[in-house]
Image 1 (spheres, helix red, strand yellow):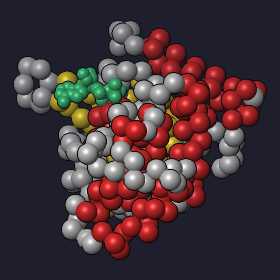
Image 2: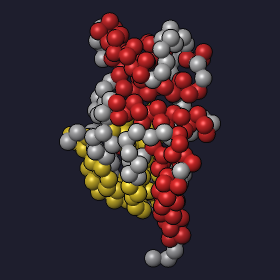
Image 3: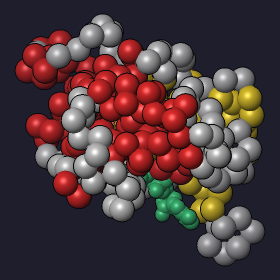
Length: 257
Ligand SMILES: Nc1ncnc2c1ncn2[C@@H]1O[C@H](COP(=O)(O)OP(=O)(O)O)[C@@H](O)[C@H]1O
Ligand SMILES: [Mg+2]
């Protein structure tokens, strides 16, 4: 996935015109998890929605798998803070939704859905309804559904922001494991430096008004990660690096040019 010189102006040509993103360039390679870290309002969701084809960019270009993004398509999968599950559908039917909407026959996809459900640690819950599951389990269902469409790039907008800290850290690891096992790539939005360094192979730091890239921190802590990392000095080095990029950017805000 390549974002090349992308700009976004909301309400262009009106008095409310707002430069939300200014000349953003970044890439996510196959098999890579990149965390997009920045304070509220810096344009993280805007960028993700443009990569997902939900909004057009005002300038620049976005390529997924070498193809310019013009509308939502099968190459990207999106997930938000609140799992959007249908309460009247069982877990397995929620997971099957992307293929059902493409008109394919259910039975052809049932094996794949069940494999994904097992991979996400939800075996035995196939016939339950979403409201019978915990928040973390509901997010696992949303991950399975996102993977059902076989996207190249997963776009995750603060996916575990509504979960408690311990569950979030556990889900971060689970998500990394699933992404790597499936050889996909992911761009995950967070405003938490610890989560960014814990889950990301790289952390891209953004600053607000207008949204710009402040810098990047590589996190060479290996593909397989465990909860032990959370208390490690190693991880702390990268958390501090990411934090200081955020702070530097804040300091430069509001200064006269
Ligand atoms: N649909 C929209 N119309 C106008 N302005 C918007 C819209 N969506 C977001 N914005 C503005 O764009 C900026 C970036 O928002 P957003 O992408 O949601 O940031 P983040 O996800 O980092 O919190 C904010 O100033 C926000 O108010
Ligand atoms: Mg947002």
